[in-house]
Image (cartoon, rainbow, N blue to C red; front, side):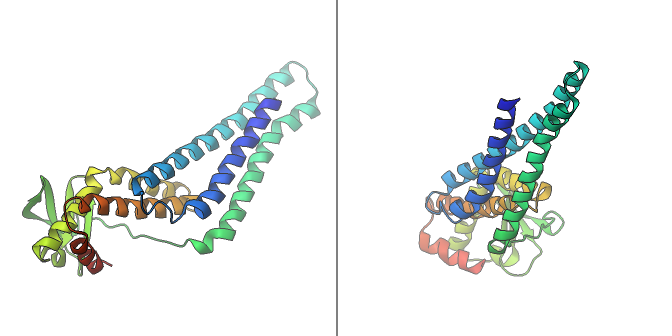
Amino acid sequence: MDAQLLGLVLLIEFVLAVSLIAPLGLSGKFSNRPTLGISVWFLLFVLSTLAALTAFLIAASFIFQSYFNLQAGGNLFQILVISFAPWLLLGFGGVLLAITNLRLAPYFDRREAALDLDAISTPTTERFEGVEIRRLSLPGYFAIAKSSAIYLSQAALELEQAQKTAVLWHELGHIRLGHQFFKGLSSFAMTVAPWFLVSRVFNYELTRLCELAADNYALKRVERQVLNRARRLFL
């Protein structure tokens, strides 16, 4: 049990470290290497999730161990102390996470509105690199990519050809680089644990790095000046 308690403490410390260090130490980084940044944030998210699940399983295992010890006639007080110890550690870890959120939350306050793209778009006769282009019924300049289509507002569809092509290559980059999976993962994190700062920063960083990676994908095919002119219209 000593080894299990030590493992539980280390797992809690790891989750706390990621929750604290990642937002402060990694946020805003990887601008020059967005693909690496996506991989790092994805890895930290997976490791933190596995660590949290493992910590919970270790705590749950103490219940079964306590039951068998009671059946064997062990000391009741000692068994109860050992049984509740891991849950107290988990509770303490949760309190520390809450304090971390309260301390750092003012630095990260970002919200996104989800749109039903199919409901506010209509098909066009255009295709780009085999991908369907749909017209968004929204004012202003909008361009959004999903796995099966690129959605452009009317203003974006009427851009001069060079800028429109740059926008399309950028959106196609999102599709080709699999950004929808990562964005879905970050949305899942925000849905499951929106109160955790690390979930919010994970969502923010993945969005930012995916945009940079899509820019790099487009810049292999279009001039930076053209892409920059087009991007300024979408801000």
